[in-house]
Image (cartoon, rainbow, N blue to C red; front, side):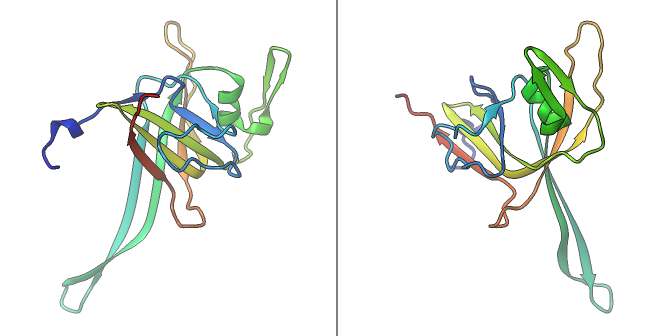
Length: 185
C-alpha cells in the first residue's frame, strides 16, 4: 500500500517504559506483543530526544583497467542505538558503569568508576506507533561502548547519554524488529 497516510507514524515508549535490558542468556522475545520475558528489566525514563538508531556501512569500489567501477564491496557495518537516561537509579547506573560496579546497601548506592569494559547484554526497545501499533526492537547482544558527559545543572535533569553497539548473534543478525497491531484483550 504505497502513499498511505495510515503508514505515517510517530513513536513513543510504552506505558511500562521504552528500554529494557537483560543478560545475553535471556530468552528473547520473538514478536511484538507477547509478554516480555522476566529476565528483562525496565530502565526508566529517557530524555525527550528519544532513541536514535544508526547504521554505518563502509564500502570499497573495485575498478577495472580503464577506471570503470565494476564492483562495490561492503567492508564494514556497524549498528548503534543512542539515548540519554534521565533517572538516577540502581538499574540505570549498572548499565552506565557496569553491573559489578554498582552495589546497594539499604537505600544507599555505591558506584565505582573505572576503565573496565562494560559487559554485553540483551536489550529490548518498545515503541508505541500511531494507528494502534507497537514496534519491538530486540538486540540479542549489545554493549554500551560510549558514555557521554554527565552534566549537573540547576533546572535540568541529570542525564546519562549512552551509545549501544550491537553485535551479530549465531544467525548473523544484530537486531530483530517486530511490528504488530495491538489487539484489545
